Length: 255
Image (cartoon, rainbow, N blue to C red):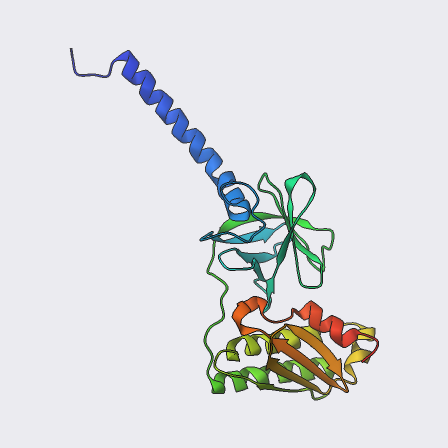
């Protein structure tokens, strides 16, 4: 024998190479299915123990991060300070639709790995492609001074959008400071969004104050010119209302 591979050995090696190439070719599609559904089919986003955090790019160039590592699916667009806490629901053909807290679809995922994102400029949806990993979406601890600064920034943004002063104040504890600060930012986003439409601007005319506090249930209500936002710190980023829910509360006809 000359020490070279036999015909049988060469056949085995060729088969292994083909198998590895096939695995590599399908790995990307499999990884997307794993992110959205887990390894054993749809789990509705509730029982992921340590799934990856992924970045996506839509057809129109919208970049967003989808974080499935926490109790609720979280989504953040790169050009917005708001993190959306989503609720997964089953859809036809085994798909999953991720909705926000006012029931609007934000994301749709298919069993084959396809992702559709719904935006204000593309309400009917647009395809999104996996662009890589990302950092988890989490609230950072916040001290009293930092909270005051965040409240001031939110007040300034909201006041500019509404074209009159809207004061932001809160009753916070060390446990609730971070989520209250985030809720204040989200409230300013809601005011800015309402200010872009004539009907929204008319509703904002009577809004003078935003008050944030900790409570047992997430809520957003308006009474006598004050927008009251209740947060639940134990729920993290899901423990405060979205800008959509806040805008709906401000725009409600009976206040």
